[in-house]
Structure formats: structure tokens, C-alpha cells
Image 1 (cartoon, rainbow, N blue to C red):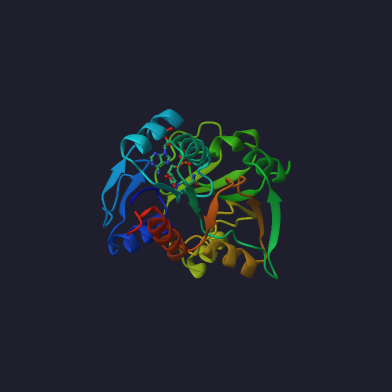
Image 2: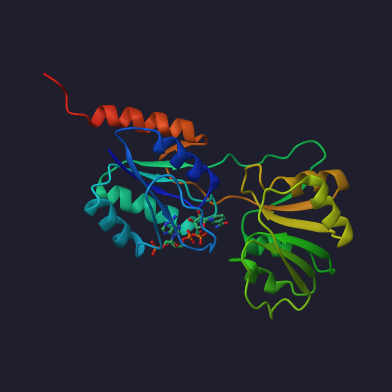
Length: 253
Ligand code: NAP
């Protein structure tokens, strides 16, 4: 059985590890090619876009892929839309693997926003000191609120930020420690954090630190997920694939 995993997340890498040990399932892990320091997975991999829905459908058909696994980040909206459309066009099942979202706990002061533009508006008129940890691709939404100071943390440099006159960039890749996050919040006199509800442990430390310091968090909700078999645990996807493999196997006489 042939499987294509759309990756770029720790969940996708974990699934790749599980599949490396599995006989009878040939899986390829696909990366967008955004990050420069790519760690080679234990299964075959490819990098770069497919060329839209048509390109992905062509890849699925020409590679005789039996199951498509969308294990991309919950906020990677476009590729997930393409995955749903291309799997339907190729007539194969789509499985979604995503980490569970964070939920507020006692002591959390969350302000929910459904888009980045709404998050920028939620900062209000009065200038604030903002810790912006939303990745680098949607920073431009905050050009609508240039009066704030932004401490921006990204994995890769975000490029010029001329629309945000009071911005400072720090680079960092999780996992982060709550004590170190609290130190940043204190040292930078941060008033409010803006983040996406990515879920997972690696980036949760800032939520813990905000709770400790009583700081508000503007939490951008996830886009809607595709209607497909959905799992949070890579082991459950492996089970699904093994069951599908059995269903695909020619019956003996
Ligand atoms: P996106 O906006 O949904 O996708 C933009 C385009 O990038 C897609 O149309 C596709 O190009 C290509 N692409 C995306 N993921 C791909 C993959 N795994 N394999 C091959 N091509 C892929 O995606 P994004 O938000 O820029 O995220 C890019 C990658 O970074 C994703 O793989 C995601 O898992 C990872 N990531 C994203 C975030 C986030 O917050 N967005 C955070 C951590 C990791 P074509 O149309 O040409 O096929």
C-alpha cells in the first residue's frame, strides 16, 4: 500500500517513524520546503509544492497512492484544502492527523479571535507591548495596529517589517521552557501575548508563563478542519492504515 504524508509537523515525523518499522506500507513524507535545516526522516521524502490541486492529484495518480494523510500544521489552510480536493478527485481516502487544540484552564485570561485581523483589533487603541508568536506569514495583519510595540518571535527571519515601526525580532524554535518564557515577558514588560491555537507541548510554555504572570492571551482559533477521518495520535493513523491495507489486500481462495 502506498501512502503520501503531507508533513512539516512533529506529528508527521512521528508517523513517519512508525511507518518506517511497518512492512507492506510504502510511505513518502512531503515537506513544503520552508525551513532550511531539514532533518532527513527515516522514510523516503520529497520537498516543495505540488502545483495546486491539479499537481497534487497528478502526484497521487501517477504515484498510485492509496491513502493521503494530511498531517500538516492546523494553520496550513491552503494545503489542507488542496488535500481534500485532490484526494476526492483521485478517489482515495483522506486522513487528517492534527494535534489537539489547547483549551483554557483556571487562571488563563484568553481573548478568542477567529482571524489575525480580529486579533489585531482586539489589541485596542492604546499602545501596548505585545509578544507576537504567530509565525512569520501573517505578521502583515498587524500593520493595521502600528501603534503597539511588537516583540516578534519566529523560526526563520520574517523579512522587512516597515509597517511595524516599533518591532523587535527574536528567533527561536521550540520546545520552550515556561521559566524562560516568563523571563522574556518580564524583561520586555509585555502586556499581552498573541498566538495561534496550534496545540502541542513545544509551544505551550508561553501559555503557562502568561497564566503565572496573569497576562492576557489573544488566542487565534483554528480554521475549520476538513470532513475526513481525523486523529490526534499518530498511532491511531497507523491503525487506520493497517486496517485499510487489509481491506485492499486481494482475498485468498
Ligand atoms: P499553506 O499556506 O497551507 O500552503 C501553501 C502551499 O505550500 C501549498 O499550496 C503547497 O503548494 C505548499 N505546501 C504546503 N505544505 C506542503 C507539504 N507538506 N508538502 C508539499 N507542499 C506543501 O502552508 P503554510 O502555512 O505555508 O505551511 C507550510 C508548511 O509548514 C506546511 O507543511 C506546514 O505543515 C508547516 N507548518 C506550518 C505552520 C503554520 O503555522 N502555518 C506552522 C508549523 C509548520 P502547492 O499548491 O504548489 O502544492
